Image (tube, rainbow, N blue to C red; front, side, top):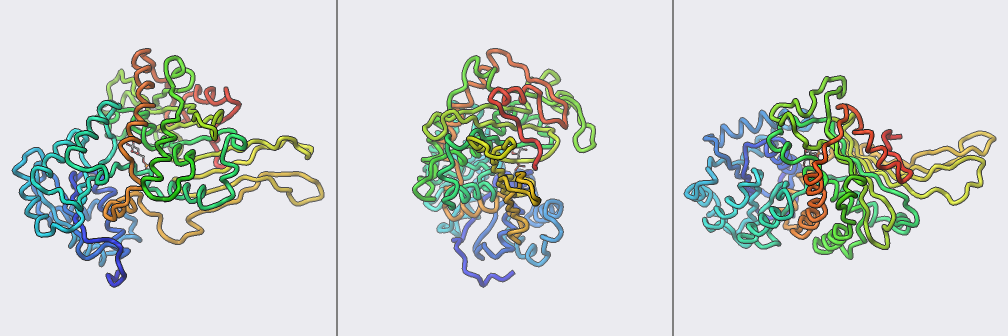
Length: 490
Ligand code: BG6
């Protein structure tokens, strides 16, 4: 690595609260390492990790290396640049509930009052307000400071508003970075590139040409040691309120006038506000709530959710949701957006399928399937357009073929961790890929009545065997509109 390239980043101090936590070790610290390795960080850039454990910086760095070696592929781990990366790390044992401890942080930060300061709250949400108050009272919030928060931002509209108000007591909205790590994924940004960097799709991107859209976030993992959080949260709050709705919004929004954060956020909020509310009995007909029972995922026997460590044996928490969502606008009236997410599914797959309408009349002596655009976000990044072409031979027989873009084959560079982009954007001061408080509120406004109805009607989740694609009712949900989930990546 050479530091001789020019930097677009200003000198910074990134203060990571929750520095010994899983997210910091697994994603945030490796993400910054990659940016360091690519020589994108200025020499004057420190990462100050804060946690309660009584460690020296040296001990912390050792711990960080053990973790990093298990999360970074050996071919991407470079001993030389790792060593220089570690020089950026400072560890400070701080009890964030004790105001006097913020003086230690002040000592570390005060020599560099002009640097960009990012306070990254990778902690339980219950500590957000306390940390904001702590840094504020210690006089650490400068003009160049920002605060970054991980989801979940509340568990309903009321608690989200409360958190936002607490943040607003210490920071301006322009200083607040609400993270949805899906927005940092390159394929999600590519979705915008595909829609707004090509003239091809825009004229077709509407109800006249699109029959339905499917968005799937399937995970093979089950609750995996997160029962304390997950059993009080469930898939609707954990995945739909944020990641799934963000994908829907980017897919459905009107073209923004520019890539400026305000322009993009304005369009995103409009989509959230035009989501048709699902209330009362519609919750029963438009939504399937599921929970996995025991089964087999990739050859391994998996315990039922209710038998997992830390889960209430009578828990009704959903590990699967399928929803028929509708957007009330001229562009999308009548086009169902089928959303689904689940744990303990047969594959890890995040994928968007846009089904176009069939040709109005087939002149070929055969039924014609509709064109389909498939955007796969993970595990591989692939964009496929299924069209029909005549196969070789003397007969006029049409068959589906794919126009195929495989990002691994087309771009040689390593696929970035979503946080690499997000962390750099926080330092740059670019809020395009972060959520405005109004977006979070609009998403909860749509989610709250669903949760309330489930509670009022005591809706029990339908069981599905781990390792399957969810309850049978989810097929019935989509079949009502003459559609079927695309299970196979053809
Ligand atoms: C998190 C959820 O936000 O996203 C987890 O809390 C989920 O439950 C994870 O597993 C999925 O993220 P990714 O990037 O692996 O698709």
